[in-house]
Length: 205
Image (cartoon, rainbow, N blue to C red; front, side, top):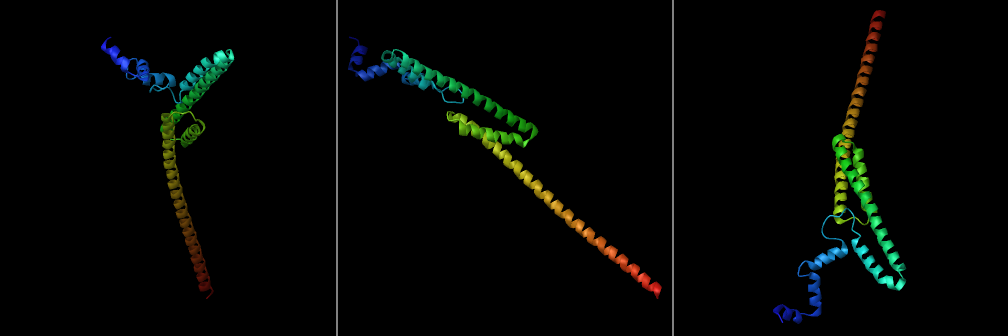
């Protein structure tokens, strides 16, 4: 018996099974886990993968086949198809929304129209509230869009408040100047009337 054979015979059954799954590769369990869950560390979209659930549904379908004469398997596979189709629809919608958010951000940079900021805030916050299968990175992205839009909106509001205060001060100044001008004209007219009366008195005497 070779040295490797002796070493293998000394290992427990669990260790040998684990080594068999590893296939001599220390990353073997991680690869199997990635295959079973559908999450291998790569970017697969804005929403969570349904690979884990679909895999387990396929296993359940295989187990149910002999007991339900295939009916249970069909139901399990239909649920798997429903999950994949639903995720595809949601993923497509989120992609469109993110594209709209990016376009709104670009248009605001060109036009400085505050309506784009309102759109970005409402759309990003709506997605965060309504969509429960967004990945953490997608949530971070949408939160960044919402925060960026809110910061710009606050700046716009401060500018509007500043302009409104300036306009109010200007209006008050003009009102004071107008009132002073009216007062001066009244005094001038009163002085003119007094002068005329003095002349009339002088003529009578």
